[in-house]
Length: 303
Length: 293
Image (cartoon, rainbow over all chains, first blue to last red; front, side, top):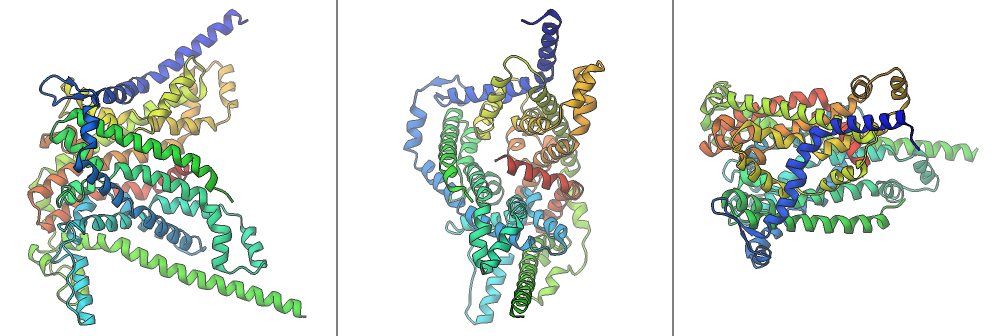
């Protein structure tokens, strides 16, 4: 049984707590939790913002299922995610090199971080220049290489060729991501591996290659798992900024991702209901993927 | 005798292995450094060239392309004037500072309540925060746009700033940090008659400077670089932030490479300065988020 002064103090504590919480909570309600509910309702509505909304049941989801563009853009999104494993291998190699007790770590880390830090419109404009078919860096190098080996080579029209636009975006993404946060996570994980394990392996006569697979790689598995899951969750939602600035989603829709399609539907064509429906499908995919991997991941992460 | 010999042999072998490893590392790191830096150097060179020189690039000896014939500093002046760059700058700084300040302040207060105070419904409200962290931004983006439109706030600073302030992520991150702090100091302050606000202001905040600095850096950079949201809610040029302004600049002058590069550099400079000073918090912040998972 609480006495009066204790009751008074718990009430006082609760009132203070609500006051502390209020500014954030009001914003959270207005810009996150209520919008989530509204968004779900919007998925069942046809609305162009001008006329009044119409309840259409599952029509949006059914239309989406038959929308060939939607499936094409899903494929684009997945294709662009092929850069994730490549980037992870690159980040790991850089982290391994950084872990060799060498001088100038801070210098290297800073330069490697530049592309990540500067990501955004300025970098996309720069890479449009690099990919220029006539005087961009890539094609000039390809032509020069052709001169050297005596075969006339001509580079592709990177950003205006349907087959090359996606690889071009992947290459740019690798440049941006390899030295960034994944590398730092790998480096932190490498520094946490106990030294004596390597010494024990050396006594058993293991060479560097064997040490890597027997000691390093198993100890990195939680980090690898974390990076993979986070990158894939991010990958499903990415692709808008670069494509908007560099290709406009083209050529022929080959760089339009799901996120871009949501943007177009909502803010270019004002199909609010349809856009909301796509965003919920996206959410569902991410949710299923994450739940699956947390269960599956518990078994693969071990050392 | 033979034992000593093998020991020495293995020591030598180990040293050799280390040297090979170091040489290999330096080669890898140097190659990566060149790859990372070269595009930026190209950006700087191009920004200082005559317009015609850009198309002539790579035709002569290779090193000539990396040094402009005459340094055309005028490109920067031109880029500054072609579009209202000063205005974009102001908008970006204004929006980023207010958003960052608002987010750190409200997140810290909420995190204090969640981590230090007892109140009915605490666990349930916190769970609802956690649950929304998984939801993609695309889901809330559309209703928030509609809400702002109903309020007549589209094409205003309010639309640029307000939705960015209240994030579950900031609250979550600071709560995790506050939970690690010992409770003794607070108890002592309580006995001395310190109010809850006094504890928050004089004990919690000063002790969590690293976490606050990390959240500040992340939020500032994220807001500065944000492209999609300003693109959605702003129509008039006077309200463009730098990324939207640069994209607009590009749409007007698709092939004025010298000016585009000058504009891009002007957009990147502030973020580089912030990064150089706040690098430590950035790296710590990444490790923090990594450990969480």
